[in-house]
Structures are given as C-alpha cells and as structure tokens.
Length: 181
Image (cartoon, rainbow, N blue to C red; front, top):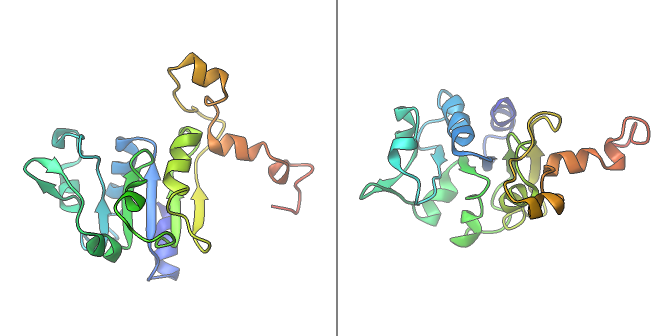
C-alpha cells in the first residue's frame, strides 16, 4: 500500500492495477487507500459471483459498482479514468477480457504474492502487461505459501508461489547475485 502511495505521489498520472490472492486482502488494500483516493480515483473490481454481504467494511461499497444486487464493471472509458483498480489475482484478467489496451497500466502491484499460486500471479500480469509496465511483487516467500488442495497440482510444483520461485533464481541469491539485482 505504501508503494502505491509513493508511486502516485511521484507519478500522479500513474495507472495501477493492485491485486491480491483473496477478496479479504484486496478489500484491505482498498480500505488502506481510501484515505488517499476518492471513489472517482479508485475502483474495487469484484467478480460478478461475489455476494454483497462479503464486502467488508461497508465503506468499500462506494468504490464498487452494483446493479440489481450484483457487482458489475463500468465502461472501459470509466475504468481507464481510475488511478487505481483493485482486484483479486484470479479476477485480474478482466481488463484484457473487456478490451482495455495492453500496457494501459503503468504498474501492476501484487500484494501477498508469497501466498498466491504462480497461475494466479500470472493471471494478474500476463494478459495486460506492456513493455513499459512495472510489476511489483510484495510479500514474504518464507511465510504461509499458497493453499493447494490438489495433490496433483502440488506434485507439479504449484505449492510454491511465483515469488518464492523467483527468489530462488541466481540474481536473488545472496552469494551469486550480489550486485546484480
């Protein structure tokens, strides 16, 4: 959240897609940014199947769009006007699905990336990242990892978060990566 605030402070025209692996974590990002951003500047994107009763606190409703008791998306033009859009990782492909331009977001921030599965994180990044988009993964790869219910998925390595997999790469190794990252 502090990184998002600093980006907006230094780059007021930045367009940020902020994601987290769960609704509660995405709601928390929105809640923590409410003192900094009005509903005209930030949108909390919810999956259409999410029920209104699970959105907490109630003040978040001002940052959502609801029709007939269902969460919906505003027009593409309206979405493009927001400085920050907050979504779950699993729902974060919505910009691509509705025709927003690849590269629209100057930054994609994935919070709690140590708890997200690799496919979840890549859903938030792959379809909408442009050449100039900055991707920020935040979280602790040594804490609780992703919850994987399928033994097959676990056997195929999906029990490891994308962040943890990246941290194991040579540029992030304390000995071999010194001065490179």
